[in-house]
Image (tube, rainbow, N blue to C red; front, side):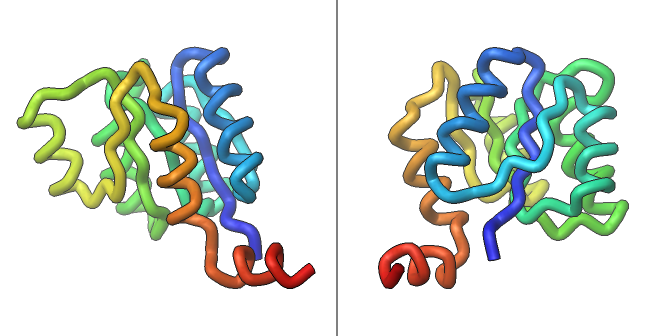
Length: 130
């Protein structure tokens, strides 16, 4: 089973780049949203395994997005990709259950490492036995 991902990022160019890297790493990007409310709708519609998001999103910020999605029943793993690096925000993200925190400008190798950790083991096994 391929892990399903929703990407929530205000910048269309950054969102496309994130989606391309995740797809290359074996994840299935099922939706891209450019604000928090659209992201929440996509999470509800697609029930992803993983959500990448920025903390600074229009219409609904990143951590309120995580909270609202969890209250709506989401069990996804959350990956913050953001320029916000204050200790308080990093701690708040950790307390909200964010699994990974990647700073912008994006270190694409770090994103690939995180993506590899998010790919289900059976997908990795199948790709090496095929």
